[in-house]
Amino acid sequence: MISWDESMTTGLPEIDKQHKLLIEKFNEFSDVLAAMGKAGSREAAGAVLDFLQFYALWHFEQEEKYMEKYNCPTARENKKDHAYFREVFGQFYYQWQHTDMNLELVQKTYDELQAWIVNHIMKVDVALYDCVSRD
Ligand SMILES: [Fe+2]
Ligand SMILES: [Fe+2]
Image (cartoon, rainbow, N blue to C red; front, side):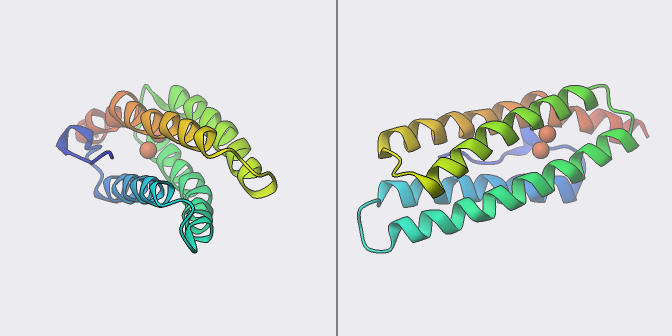
């Protein structure tokens, strides 16, 4: 489980709200995975993944626009990181949909992506804070 805290603030309420929802959905997926095998759990996990696939990509677009708008020095790194996530999550999502993914592998990939999110927000996204307040 991960949680949003003040150290993750970007100074933009809209972006912070998106991060909170992303984190919430990641946690929800963890819960569904823990209940895997029970009735309806695969469908529930699928629904969370569908949401994440759509929402994460949409969030990246919003954030990249803000980083450009505020001339953020981490804008390029942010885009590069997002491309990485898009690739890894995209593959994961595809495999999930089209193969009988081994649960351990799902959990492992998921844990990695969850760690990526926290690390990315705290190292790259938070740079927005200084750019926004300098503006
Ligand atoms: Fe980002
Ligand atoms: Fe972000």
